[in-house]
Image (cartoon, rainbow, N blue to C red; front, top):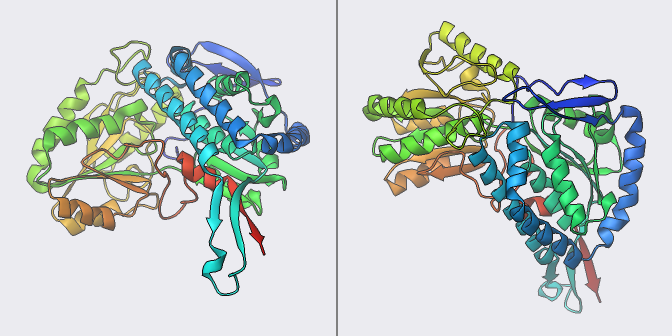
Length: 471
């Protein structure tokens, strides 16, 4: 997620013992919630410890039923949840509805995993010394999972941590982003309404001192974190011996070869670059276009980007809502200005209006500028030219962070070759880098890659095998 490029969005302002949540589009106060002081870390851990046998004691059927019922209830209450996402995260209402739909699927997949993921028979008699034995392995809970979630997918990323953890029989301490706590709390309430014992999930809101104490606790068996790269590094230094699953963001390249279907490529990449105001860890950031079609692509891409409507996220006609804060929009614009000072050229956008930054397209950015090197996490896309396949692949791979990439070509052999050569956690062929379904494994390659999301894959990381052998 966001790195130092845009800086983390300004945290919700705190007063004595509480913090204020504001609508990023209007600045109006949504509500106030109590902070969990660091001195209460032991009490939080004690509650989670007491929940471990409760969570593990739920049958797989019971876990699945809770998740299935919550999934159906979420679908029935989709508009309420979408409105909450718009209010605190600033996504447009159409984007918020899609996020709710994905969370419905995430919970449903988690229910299916609770039923499916019980283990396997082991063919002991297939090996010397095992002829007179039979057995199996089960998948057992880890115990306490600490889940730390970001603001950009305020509901579905919470579902991606809670769903598999509950399916696996774990107790959870959930720390949602302070900019977007209400979507998370609504989901927890929904799960409780549909049969989840209240103590299985403990929601906390606190500063780095509280978070650090929870991360370091020996009883916490796994930390599942989605957020900034430097925060991820700090977690690894604090955590000690436990499982870590981290999604730390990316800097997605999209390669447009000379034979690409240009209208398809333009539409897909515009959506991929500016969805959720660019606050998307797999958003199309570096768009590499072959020399032969660069001018034509640039004209169509800039024209299409200018057509997007930036404004009130509650307006059904809006395509781009606010960034999470005015500070975040200003920081992104300042980074664009620094690229211009280094020789880049702005083709559209670049001027913020409070928390709103319209779709911004930049070309001629020096390859060593942070706009190319780091995750932008803003509605900013960079156009770059390339002349041959080797150059495109080398430039696509020339970053430390690699979640997803995109490739546009009509040549299947070229597409498969590029998919093999690109160093990333996923390669989308003839689609933008931001395509994802909630059943697929999701995570990065290269530096910072640690674990996978996607319900089945998270479930396996949140459980451990236990072998039973009968002689």
